[in-house]
Image (cartoon, rainbow, N blue to C red; front, side):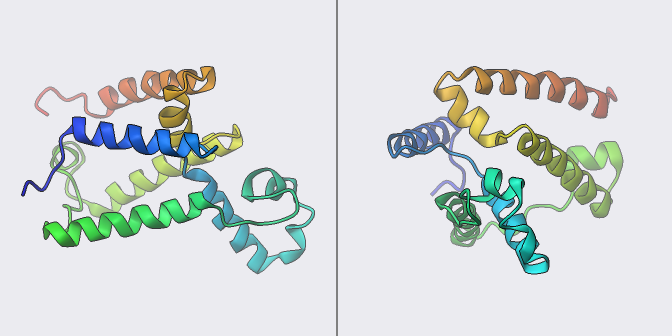
Length: 173
């Protein structure tokens, strides 16, 4: 059994999954789960903020308080599914620092993790400030031909390609 799926298989499964979620009246996205988690952490430390917070009403669930939605379960299921797939195929852990990163920046896992966390945080934070979700705009929005999805995807590639070219600019990479 092959341990990797082709991009065609993955694309077909993602498309069918996206269609199923769309037909259920929802959209595929994950950042709401992170906002809901932040809401629960806020509630733990400062419960008086939740009922009066505009942010809670707009991003964490319902207009009256926090709510764990199916998207939160999707993120949990994605983690569990990835772990199960890895254990079933017995691939072992991925390298801490990818080869291309090592050639450009050296073999320093902390630097790699710090950059990955900062990049992910900035993308997520920006998407939530704009009232959207990165995966929802690209996966769901593009498949529905939503203008916001198309514009967001264009912006991601317009920023990502020059940045990757800048970061990995050495000719021997």
